Image (cartoon, rainbow, N blue to C red; front, side, top):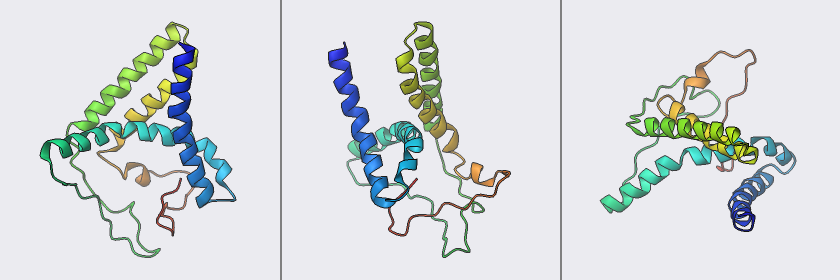
Length: 167
C-alpha cells in the first residue's frame, strides 16, 4: 500500500502546498516564511469549498449556459469604508447542511482512526473536519466574526494593491 499511497499523497499534497508557498513568496518576499503556519487552514478551506465548486460545475453542465451568481459588493472606497458594518444576507440554501454533515462524518472518521490506532491519518482527516465545518457554519453569516468584540483591535483585511489575494 505504501508504494501506491505515498506517491499519490505526495503528488496531491505537495503540489497545492508548493503553489500556495510560491504565490506567497512572490507577494511577500520578506515575510513569506510565516505562511507555513497558515498553510493547513488554507488547505482546509480549499477542501471546504469543494461542495460549492461541485455544485457550480454540475449546474453549468445541466444548464449548459454561463450563469453565475453575483458576489456581495460592499461599495468600499478608500480607507473610510469597512465591510464589517455592511450587511449582506446570502441565500445559502441546503449546501451548508451538506457541509456540516460532511464535517461531522469526517469527525467520526477521526474517532475511528484513533480507535484503530491509525494516528498518521488524523492530521489529514482534521483538515476535512475543519474545512467542511468552517464553510458550513460561516456561509450564512460571512461577517459574523468581524462583528465580535475581541480584546485586541486588529486592522481590517483589505485586498492587496496588486489585486492578488493574500493571507
